[in-house]
Picture 1 (cartoon, rainbow over the protein chains, first blue to last red):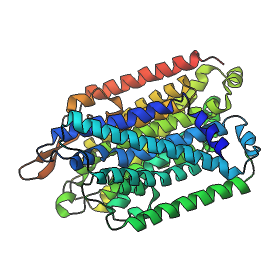
Picture 2: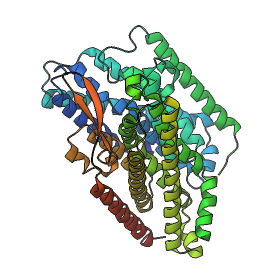
Picture 3: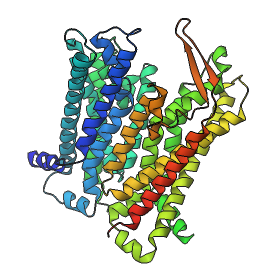
Length: 243
Length: 248
């Protein structure tokens, strides 16, 4: 398993994926802080209000496509040429191939969340001049967003494995993100995998959306992940090689 | 013509039609969910749609058009079959058929979206009088900006063998275009991905004191529509140049 993870990690070296990783959260942070400063008449100069602006569009619309790009990139290489035949004959259980990719996408997701938080801190202190330090709750929201992001990672890896196209799973992720926003607005966020990250991150809200509902939130994350892992395992072990 | 027929056959195997449907349905479902419900809002229902649809297009279409472009070029890129193809058909016929297919699929996206607007207005019982000029302007602008973005995507897909470049431009374009809607108007003129917004035929006036908003028509920016078409031609030329010089 470790060798599989190492192999997947190698695929990310010198990859253009790092550019997307850097630019997308940066754009979101610049816009969020600019909007925060422009609306200081309505908003208070507090970390919670800056959070609403930073996560406004990023968590709702663009986080899922970003994860989708990570997932599609890792599967893309297997879909090229005869690589699918090669990996299916590798001396490892097929599910480990999927799980190794999941671990790498999870690592990328965690790094993305870290980069978002670093930008949030830098923009808050140096640009918006917010006094003090961010509340611990925001750090917890980041981590909860990461857990929600793992569900999206599992789903996107499954989609990118089945749909042999780089682009289509990314479009599905955008549609899923928009669907997530609609599900959250109807109070049914726990029923839609793409909404879990929005709930976890507490996007565009100053009050905790998951307060008192941590167990259902984590249960929903576990249930969806189990379903996607199970589906991936079944497809990889039962389906024949197609080129 | 035979090259175009071949592209149509490839499109059937690539499931281009479901992708086209997905792009327009995402916008329509979103619009339907945010459609006005109260009597006051129904009285300005169409204006609200003419304002909301370009915002939704800015979020969905840049990525959607890049996906279409990437899909249309993907078979050639993945199979590395340009060498074989160029012995069977001219580069010009390949590019023209791919451009024509993209425009056709884009037209389908616009037709579904515009048909959806009419249906939404009828189903929701909008009491505002239907303004055909505003409607046609929205359709024309959506088609023009989509075409420009499609050619931009096709150029990137041909130029870079790694499709991540196309997707990156699509996502970053969507995000920056959306931000342009909330930044000073001048910024939006420099972000072609968000041209749906400065091309809007209505604007929202928001009174901070009374906290009441309403919609007003704005003069159509024909010069910006012209610039959009010019950019489409420019990207088309860049795409053709990239294919002409492509080493196989």
